Amino acid sequence: MSTFTVINDETLAQAVAHCRKRLVYIAPGVTEKIVGAMKAAMQRPQPPALTVIIDADPEVCRLGYGTVEGLKDLQALATAQLLPIRYQAGLRLGVLVADDQIWVYSPTPLLIEAGSDRADQPNAISLDAVTQLQYVDFEVAGYKLTARRVQIPTDLLVGSDRTLEVRLRNSFSLLEGKESLVVQIPDSDPDTGEPRLDKQGQPVLVDYSELAIDEERKKIYTDFLTPITGHGQLISKMRRQAFDTRVEWFKARVADYTVAVKEKLDQAIEASVKGMTKALLPGVMQRPPARLMKHSLTLTPTEDDFRSAIEAELSQAFNIGDRFFQPTVKVIFKDLTYETITDEKFLALLKKSFPGLVQQEIFEEHESAPEVRRAGSSKPGH
Image (cartoon, rainbow, N blue to C red; front, side, top):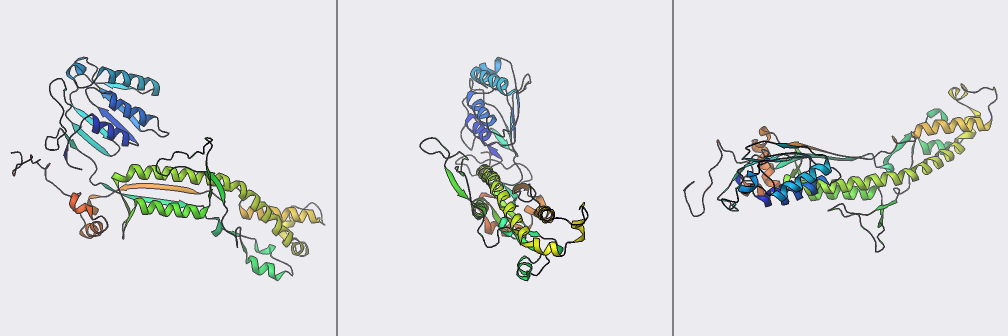
């Protein structure tokens, strides 16, 4: 993004619409378009933190720094959202903070002059982050049931059934020899997160499994993230909004999958525990581990006593509950440091992976803000 730029109602509204976490609007007045963008942002499930500071003097609207309708809309939004509006008399500059981007601009008094839309007649400077790239740590964990193995107490593997002992090898895979659990979840649009409905307005259901999670995780990497050897994954900030939307969509699908799987998982674990108990019971009854006897109130425990004790041991081994199956999706963003973006080796890798960066001069440095060349002029400022 250029140091000098043009800020008007259209660009302000776009910046507000793209904001996700922090939004600060400081200006003499406000218009309906800008308040409309604020309203849409505040109606999201996770709205940004909003701060608004304006000048309440009627002179503001008379000069064209804002509109009466805009002020009314802002007051209605503040009332509906319980937002405090702060006032600063005599305010004649504009500041917009949208997440990690900052614009400082000169508001246009539309009663006196028309606003500029020409790049060679800027009214603002951009103070956005040092680079338009970010590191992204994107991790999905705890969802692979096919790889989950359970440790079985060694002293329960007793008796003459050597086949059973060899097969268990002191551990047990819940889904060994089986495909991953397949459940049905509500479908939705990956680009918007909106649910997909059938002709009757009911949610469309789709099959979902850990294989589908793998495919969608890889698709997010392919669509948004670029690996830089020795440095991790990078994302262009221009793709952050689309990336955030896709990740929220993905999180919702994993959450729906978790709920559906837990219902089937409880049944699968219960069946496995009972089946293993039946197989282990004869050997344990012949040579019961001493620790199984410490809670017995009789010298001759019954078969039901042993069965209950084994089931309790196996249930503990399976760790039945949320800790056994708890998928998580984590995303952590980190900005590039100055040392990194001035490292020649890093820049060489970056330019190879992001060929457009050379043309955009994304890492160009200036001792002061670069001058803007006017159209048709060979010298700055002339």
